[in-house]
Image 1 (tube, rainbow, N blue to C red):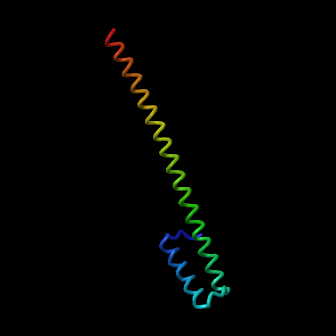
Image 2 (cartoon, rainbow, N blue to C red):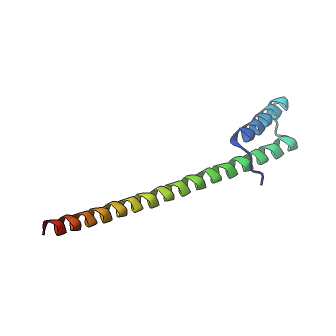
Image 3 (tube, helix red, strand yellow):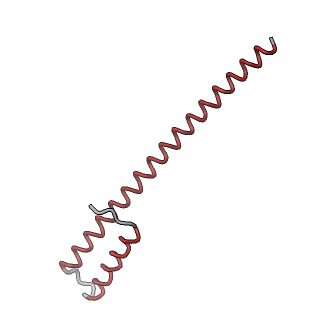
Length: 87
């Protein structure tokens, strides 16, 4: 499957709409082939976008957990150091 930009997919969708208008709304073999192609492209692009967002969310969750861990560790070390200094 081709990796087209959303702009390129939209251009193909406009071409499909033009063909549909020219044929008076009748779905010809050419129209149907283009419609199926655009549908596949849009589905692929949507799936890719969803996958990207899921990976980014996973990365944010990972970073958030690491930040929390780092802050807790730092706070424990700081507390121990303060305790030792006061002793």
